[in-house]
Amino acid sequence: LSRSEGHREGIAAVRRAVAAAPDLGIRYLTLYSFSSENWSRPITEVQFLFNLIRHFIRRDLADLHKNGVKIIVIGNRDGLPPDLLALLPEAEKLTENNDRLNLVVAFNYGGRDEVVRAARSLAADAAAGRLDPAAIDEASLANRLDTAGMPDPDLIIRTSGEQRLSNFLLWQSAYAELAFLPILWPDFDGAALTAAVENYRGRVRRFGGLPARGSA
Image 1 (tube, rainbow, N blue to C red):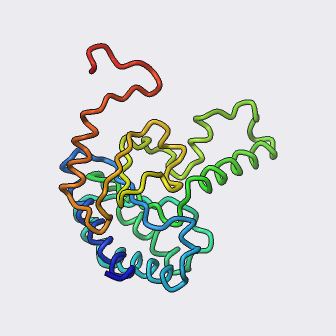
Image 2 (cartoon, rainbow, N blue to C red; image 1 turned 90 degrees about the vertical axis):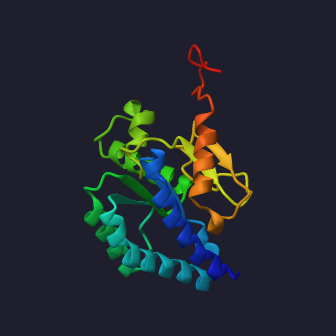
């Protein structure tokens, strides 16, 4: 398929993942839809990706809302087209009271950019005398991230056989379990998600310490 067709099939994979997640006990599902580095792609591809997001919101929002999905958008909204800037908060507002699944859409998102924006916010408060620099700790920085108030990811799944995070949730993924799958994202489905979760459930998480007594 062409790259455009691949992106279109990727939206179908989003629908399959969202449908499968609640039955697996997943409360937060974060999808990397457009990275801050994707602006370097050909303008026609960027515009196509934006049109896909527009289409997804307009077509799927009602069904997501009906199925109890809460939409949360993270990322830098500076420089986005005005109509998209209006659509994103509209989707968040409509679904804000849903609690079956939190669908976190990372749009125009980059992990380094997120940390820089959080540090800049802390620096501005410190410069204005609203914050003692000595009081800045991990929690205060985490509270300035786009994901403030959300749990850190337990599992990060990377498709396409690539074995890197590609600037995704760099701060939050410090102790996340990683799964690298050989399948391409347009082929991702509920079975692939289930297999990754089952593999995760068999791992022992130490968070830098020792396994709990009785653990393998």
